[in-house]
Length: 241
Image (cartoon, rainbow, N blue to C red; front, side):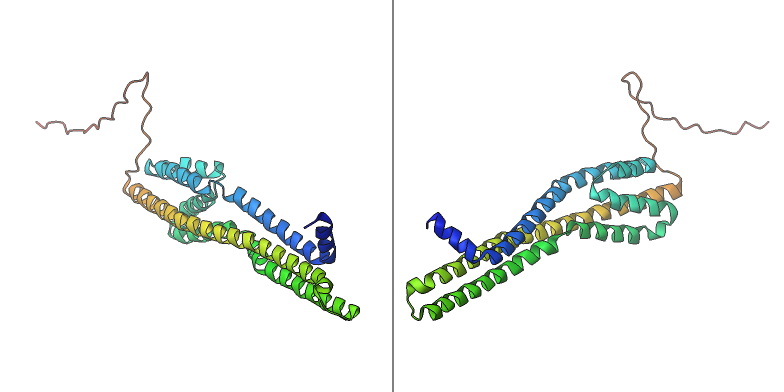
């Protein structure tokens, strides 16, 4: 196929190919944005979860709050909301964490509707170009007053080009859409487990605080030595005479 023939095909179907080009650019933009947004979210979230749980187990609630405020991981929004509600209305912590987790998972699906729209509509745009090309082929036959391959070849070729372009755009868009949906579902499952661990740690912290035995952070050892454990002193009553 010569360059001149390709140019003629594009010229004949420029409206359809322009629409497919816009579809393609929109799909590629969403793919790049979602790859950037979801890159390493799971390992970063797991590392952040371990630090916050460690602070809660050590009884250091201010440290856990500070970790949430300084972190840019999406899980930090869930934990920060939970800690904020826990300090004011502890009985509403579970509901607050669940609602914030749902909001974060919803943000993971951002723009996926556009990618799905590209994947589902691109074949129909190409099919529309196919119909237009066939109509042009029949119009050429009516103008020429005769049939034959030479008369209809240009219209049929243009129709096939539009069909191929529509299928190409749809194939990569559908593959990317299914990948991101699977990725978001995996993140949603892990975030559910992370929030359950967080709520469990908060519950244990509340029990220890109610019992007055919240563990304190271990004292730092001086000069590389081992910190001595505190010795409990028990007062004994003075002997009576």
